[in-house]
Image (cartoon, rainbow, N blue to C red):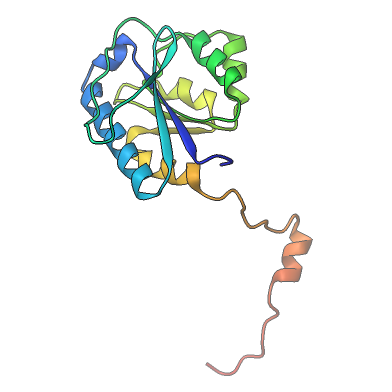
Length: 176
């Protein structure tokens, strides 16, 4: 990740008020705050409904429930991502929103979009089509470690021929 700043976008549509999602959301946000503090990282929080607006909780105060009603506007999310192309996004949503083909294409092109499906009724089929980094809520710890994992990875052999050259030749059997 080029920046150590995480932009956490919280779906505040009416469907996020159902089936225990409000308390799940509060607990996930508490965890994100603890994780970022322990790992010396930074997170900014935004509510997503008709538009995307920053939410500021004092550091010493607990996370507050956000008002959930209506539907979340995908056009607002797409506009926000265009205005903030370098931002690493963690979207907490149940996936119950409508998007057109252009919006779907725009979101799928983002390399920095991480989605956490909220609740047992989350539309994971839709969320999985939007990002290769789409997870269930119980995988939040893995998501956060993935976001801040160094992007340098060991490169394996490009072909079987290269792999054969790497393998160690059999040593003579020493009767063990």
